[in-house]
Length: 534
Image (cartoon, rainbow, N blue to C red; front, side):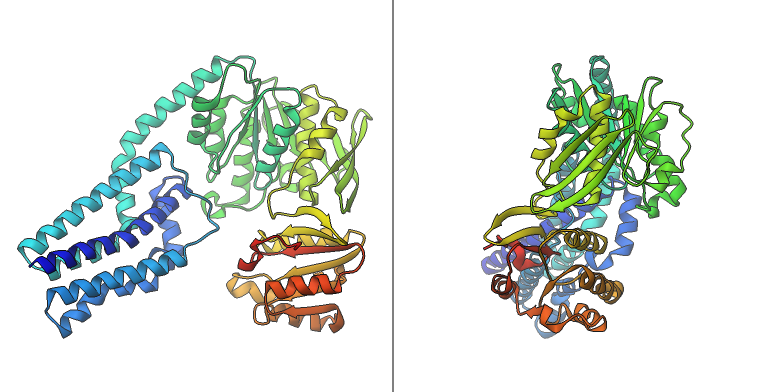
């Protein structure tokens, strides 16, 4: 009897491991889907292999064990082993690119109630084991282990009235704080891409003159914005920059209803979240809610090079400031863009004829657009172009995202190893192709694209062959499609090398490097975590 109790305790401890991991993942997915069960259901239907991994069939080991033995200890030990194996696999293969779970008060409440439900379930399993049979007890634990997403959704539904009440109080408090700060300048920033960069760049520029508060974190919804206001807004803040996310019509208008922005920036519009918006027209309308809700004295700052922004006719007749690179009839324009080992230099010209030259360590045309938005905002807020030279020069790139690293010897590194997006890879090679020097690409190719992996690698290899002097491919099998593309365009075999692994690639880079070599590390691979310049 005592040995059975010990084995059951071991089983419970083993059961807790995968359950805890799966509950965390379930809660994280709920957060990423804006705490909406319907959105979570859609995600689940498209990601069944993540909801229930094939390895989890091991949960049903006890059913097989019962066939061979009716010994309780044997069944308990086998079940515990199955839970430990599943946990080990799930932990080793856990996703790394979905962002971090933010432990907000709401998330903590969801965790609390979910674990309470699991506590009740495990207590039921213990009671069944004590008074009915060990086999039925194990079955209860197996069922519970398979239901983390279901229990999290149940928890979310149970807490909905509570959360609604808490959220409304938070929104009301935030509105009162904004109304109590009549001199506060509120800037709203949205867009399909670039909004986070615009926010960061605007903060850097405006901080030269003002005391600035910006929204933080990855989730810029109505509730996360109110949380920033309630917890961080102080009487001495002069500017509040609010990043605004949306997955459906009305989301941005809701945030605007809280903050009452005086300036509204739209960085870009593309076909993102089509599954929730339904059409591009709805996306355009939703993004422009930041303009439609501006007051009479408000100002919209818009990227005129973006066709989806340029073609939209807002009903709100507020002042519109346009910026761009390609379009000439704009209020602020960037020209003479050049890339070098020091980064990017460009010239800004305003509609009034004012000009200034800028230097930044940021790379890429997309960053110039985002800087233009921030510069246009600075001008509207009574700053001069000359006041913006230093803060723009000091803006640091995101780590391993077109990060220009200090030159060591004759090699300059452009580290884009965090990128895994085909369009981003092409953009990075385009930048490399515009730089002077011996241009080298080091990459494992584009991975994890399933059916389109072949086409993307072939297309990217052909494009890279036009822009690069030398290419180092990491991994024979990984880069098979890329190699085929190079062969098709007759890229000289002496101008590319297939490395066994990342260390081999680094050694070869140093071996064949020429004076003024510029090496682009593109796409993410596990061994690329170190300092590439070593």
